Image (tube, rainbow, N blue to C red; front, side, top):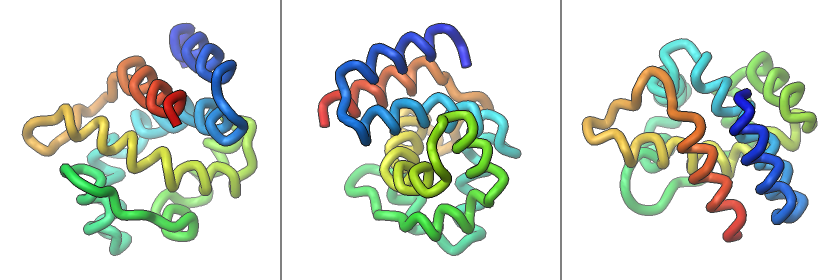
Length: 141
């Protein structure tokens, strides 16, 4: 995680409630994991499609209402290895990680694909831009 990510997370955590602080601590770890995921965020989208959640992830990528996802569905798609890594890096339990990802992941996917005119995200995410945008949204909640 870059110094800027650390500063943004720390600044946001001062103005946020407990759940928002936990989401803010999870966000940098999530963005790092997405950049390291095989195929990047596009690979993750494919994993959701292969896991039977194509309509859910498509709603996150498009305009309009994001369909909800259950923690158990996320666990199936992401796998315990990624979840353990996210829990370790964020300092949260795996259960908390799953619960927060039900809110964070749709927002992150939406942010990434709303800037991708062709429906395909870049191989490496601009973590600073996404972090700033999503943390700003958390602060408004």
